[in-house]
Length: 171
Image (cartoon, rainbow, N blue to C red; front, side, top):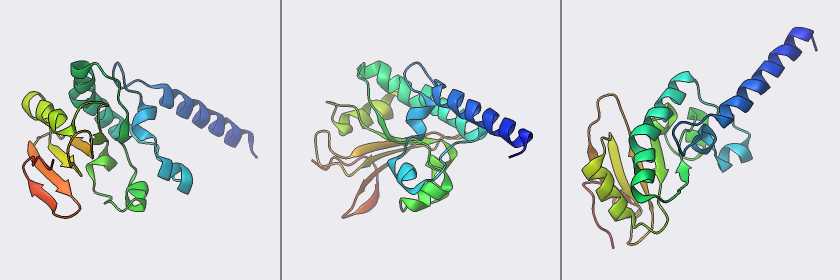
């Protein structure tokens, strides 16, 4: 291996190491927002670019951190950034807002997802808020996204009915 290649590789390793430590808000790191078991299993590089990192920071500042501050309960994002290859691998679209770093799927332990959606709907600016696979209590999850010109779309998704307008209490 040429010396230049070794140096380039060292810079890349240093960059990725520092990137994974980057905090996007008080309680959320980039590592949390890009983690994917599917990407690990399929050896897909799920490293975001500068635009996606910027969007993830805004997502944390406008949605995830306010939710964390309101409830005071730590929670894990189940799906944040997904590169187009990963998005396709899980059966989604390469045009998903997850691929732009603009969306996250999450739930807060002990908080019914219906209540979580009501808090977001009434207090935060969002592009899409989707109550997914909810049958009561803390079932399913919440998908929330941001955009430069937010639509404020409210949707409910379940496997039997697909996407429907509005937040529908499926309990």
